[in-house]
Length: 341
Image 1 (cartoon, helix red, strand yellow):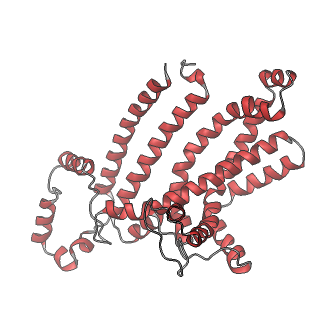
Image 2 (cartoon, rainbow, N blue to C red):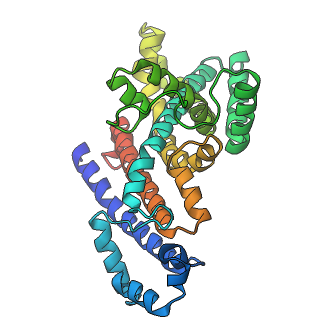
């Protein structure tokens, strides 16, 4: 089977999962306790049965559940996720405003977790049972065992209040810097593209600590998995043969060790995407980061179900598609998957 056919089949298999996700979000909208009608219509209007009945008829809420689901699916395919009862704006517009900040933070955290975990795991495997291995294992244990919200608070206490080397929890930029012209929504990228170097440096300074905190758990996890897989590959016969042929350590690492040791790591990186997006709720709250995590917290406080479901749906879709891409990359790294082995 070619990689193209495998990718097409894997993406098609994601369709039932996405459909199940839609059913789950629709069920949440209908069976969660509480009523946001008062916030949406106003307390006086919500107490008037005639106004409530007209509203429910307008949006098809007086129809049987299967009909409501079809209306929900139709609106979704048209890009309509409902209207937020807090901001009084379409949920899609809110998500387009908040999502770039979360993506910027998540990408930075993935770079921290992926790069740091790979380097530390490989280093620990090469110095197996020596002091670098012990240090890396200790770092991985602490990084993957400390709760994110606690680490965020302690990091602010040390690096902001005590040492003063990072900005405080004031969002994505300091107040004296203007928001760069929006191109991608990521302040670091937009500042680079528009040549605003001071804004770029300030945006990076604000990004460093939240990214380190958010990526800490997966950094420890990737370091441990990379260490274990690298140790297994180091003992493989083909690596011993490559060394006996006189290949340099760097050639052996690049051509034989990393391609095989990376296979389980790639799987963890795929899981990390969903984990980082969900973990961003706590990190964004502590660091006052204006992303969808903080948006979801505010929506939950106000029983803004349309906003909560919009966030859940977006994160779910990203998670499902990311895992499909991971399977494709996995097949590229290990051709035996394409042969059905």
